[in-house]
Image 1 (cartoon, rainbow, N blue to C red):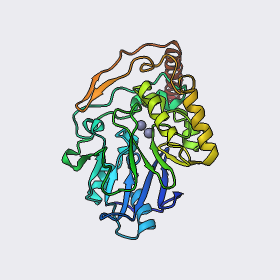
Image 2: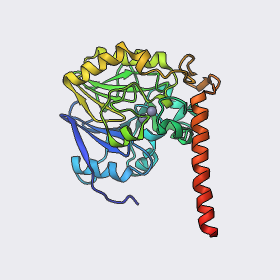
Image 3: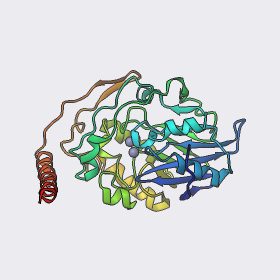
Length: 314
Ligand SMILES: [Zn+2]
Ligand SMILES: [Zn+2]
């Protein structure tokens, strides 16, 4: 049973709406062309968000509405966490890129995140994020990159790998609106202060989960070349106009300095993967800063536990 709730969504562009779920955004796009009129859901947010997504859909499109399809920008847990619950409620096709399929059909786990990069607590605790693949079986369909998604014929699907092997973004040429996913984001995804507070700062893809930086750079370059006027990203607030274009061009120019982490596990060598999943993961490099952070966290946790024990026995 899905509990009812109020939806707190925002408009991105004409026929496009978004909603922030803890620190991840989902989007809904209306489709008024072609044979499959209706609306499409992009990503599904973290686990436990299904009731909020359904409430948003019903507020926008009416009680009992359902999307014609769900499109995944990629399969990381914070973007597919509510997918299974939603599919129990809405029996609709799910689309993803061919290279993302192994992580959605139980064939492969994502490579481990790199907790040493970005210097934020979210990076540090990223090791706790689930990497286990979903098992969607034949409910997930491969996106035909030549023709796009039939339920959304006016939107182009752009292949933007790097953050994950089969990452895609969506682009509406008529008003140059971009639904980016995590190819770049508009906050510092590694920092809880930025990510939870929705503080605006155009940045490269979340560092802890990006496993091919060369591809990530090419993807951001490809998106910047589209000269988008509106960008809705997987993390952070919507960015528009000159602010967006200037920040995006700056990111492309300085990508190696500002986006690629120094001494990260994947900074020099990428994870290698194909349509079957992960083939090669570079070895973990211990990094002095990370070891120090681990020791400090361990000491703080030890201190708190010791105090609790002391309180309970005294
Ligand atoms: Zn991601
Ligand atoms: Zn994300």
